Image 1 (cartoon, rainbow, N blue to C red):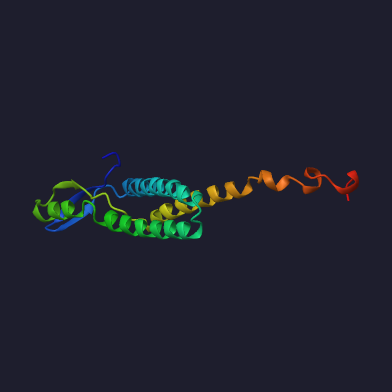
Image 2: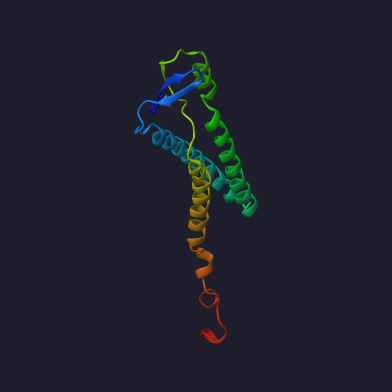
Length: 154
């Protein structure tokens, strides 16, 4: 695992305390979850923009946004429970004074917004870029393409 983990020491049977109160492990763990959800949002946004090309406009965008909300909820459930059973097992079976690492869990719920934010941003950028491109057929004037009566413009 690349992310640092907080070191705990069992103070009493079934109770542990953090060894270094000023550790940045919790912030780095939440940054990892932000990165994971950002990559997930980028992937769903890029794949979803392909659906929008086919002509499924608002249903595809609404489905992607609702899917991003559901994915953030699943990420929250996984992020709160990952490694928790190992931590609880070590806490229950180790002797007083034993050092062990905390589970790498999600603590900042704001990290979950990254999935929805990146998915929505990719959709908005791709749809906005397509709308900003001028239609070449719209610039052609009928006055210059057909022969006018009497040889001059009306």
